[in-house]
Length: 333
Length: 263
Image 1 (cartoon, each protein chain N blue to C red):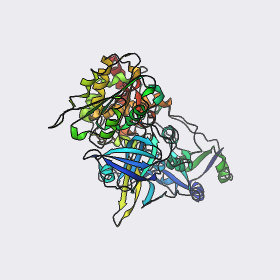
Image 2: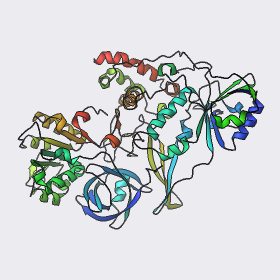
Image 3: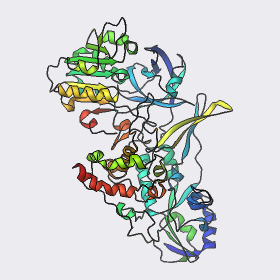
């Protein structure tokens, strides 16, 4: 079902939706960029469609909405363990096709992979997707190569064009909301071509560990982990216990995002650690995204959003690294 | 949905000190558990650590804990009657049936003896269930030797070989690396013998190689891996190697699989 309405009317409906939903979208954060006087685009709650940044890629992926950077697992006092309450409201997320594909990867790890994670599940079941279309491919995107450029796994599709809002609803939950709006033919256009193309070698396997291609990253990478933090599919976390300064008997156990590129990821008490070289960490990450996740779950982890390439302070390109695997396999064969 | 991260509290029934830094805590526990599995043990405020089970008994599990970090330092301050938080058991553990009726050799380095101790305990008290049972144990020095009493008891029913890397004054036992003793183990039928190797990464690498040199088949060699783990349930990602989660698919692996695990 498609509808057309004014921005003001759409915002009225957003307000109506806010009674039951928290609505997240990529927004411009003034002055919050990495350098002084620069801005950034990240996910936050919105009150108007005018808050949504449609024409640029968000720096962070929407994963922070369902997998918070820091998440309290429980509070403790002496022998008592208390789980935090889950917000009653449902969640609407404005996101792109690649991001919807990325959430499927998070689902794979957090809802399946033997055990289900109740914290993730509690938020995830509340989520409905609002698809944003990409008018054209952004810099560093390679969604077409990864097959994440198209999706029909959305509840609403929203396009803002010439002061009008076009909405496609695929979820009957929203039928009542839009029933008085003007009908229109609305369907999303998907990117069919990216400037960046990646080719994963068909014969890729662990032999590539021996390639010299990884040495380059020993020098170039600074192990800051930004690539992991902006990635929509990176799911790792570390446990962290804290206690309150004013009452050391009370505290909480949290999980915080972790990065396989950052020091300490493999450190064990007693001194053993693995992948000390940054090139080895790059190899671990690249292979997870385009080789071993697929081996375990049957499809590639990387969705080609290119955020890792956008954010790298050393201008390391993940897409280039994947393409280099082709020569690297020839080198080791 | 079950919340897998919520720990239960368990009372410390007994504490046994082996060395300056290694204590065994007998913890109240009723439930299924296998040798080689592990628990996430925690103290609120300090954090969680994966600790393997070293002994399983009626109403308890024993955990041997070396004081090497924030959590284990604090655990060592605990007294009998105090409570620790635990969740688990996690991991696959050893499948005792695989070894029954065979020549069995266990090679353990340092605290690596803890995860295999359950296996040794079992066959030491059921020696008739194995064709033969040899346990090789290597420690850094005499003061690092763990489970002295158990070792003495084992030697009544199974073959035990204890060695230290460096002897000190008054020590009269074996010295030298465990690999030297692999060379001397009597193996009747190398095609059938089952071998378990657990210890620090470098010790496992060379000890396994030595057994292969002795003609032991790769598919009859078993190892147990130790990695950083924050969850134990395949989520946190720290223990993953290639497509394998040590916490879910291990920590016990057949060598034919383990040899492909490159960090």
